[in-house]
Image (cartoon, rainbow, N blue to C red; front, side, top):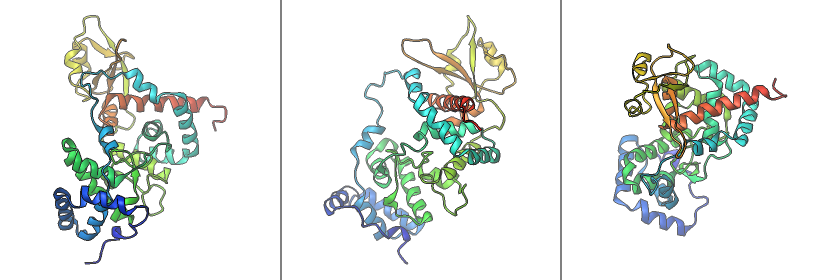
Length: 338
């Protein structure tokens, strides 16, 4: 059968020494050869073409370091420290500029998929500061490192490596050309390859999906991703929780981010919405911990949970929510607002 398009134009930018080193690590390893055979059998890839790619994939120690859990498993994360990385003047200013520059696309995506404009803006801001930090790791090498040298999540990343190769073939691109995060995430919204294939859209209508160079595609894809992961149009995201003096919080906290508690159940534990809302649907009880300070307590509704489908973290979801709100407020107050 003819060699797939992904085998073409793979020679640039690599020295012979690098290629030989990578070959020893990946192309000649039994688990990689098995992966190549599976790709050949399942998807019709050319074996020599894939071998060529894995001769050039490099083991990246920095990827393992970046993805590994902190050395002290008892360390407590700090919400205020985490929040400070995202809800800050530089990112808010960049968000206002991004929103103004792409206001028509953001509005169109919001109307089509039912996701508020500020949530779309918040996600892209948290992920890459509106395209300023999309990652500089070669995606093939990052995913090969995680697929073959990070056993605890090897199955996940072999799936993403498979998705990357399929995506490259579909987009008629060289797999070695993709660059992104240490975990293989791509473009302004940092989609993993499987998410690009499953949820990304050609929102600018040019016949291809490009999440790095087309902000319109990124905007539309974020909105569609949220819609596909359970966003409820017009429903709230989160509200502060009011805690009674005799509240029993541990059973609620143990539930984590799943919106499982109705108003009456929360009330039975001594918790209610601080704004008095009683009909916002089921909620998760969210504790945002800062060592040495009182925790913040929030009720996270279905839309808060939908944000955690992007990144399974209450800190992340709250940062998206609050950054979006901060950019919205700053944009409304800007003297040049049209």
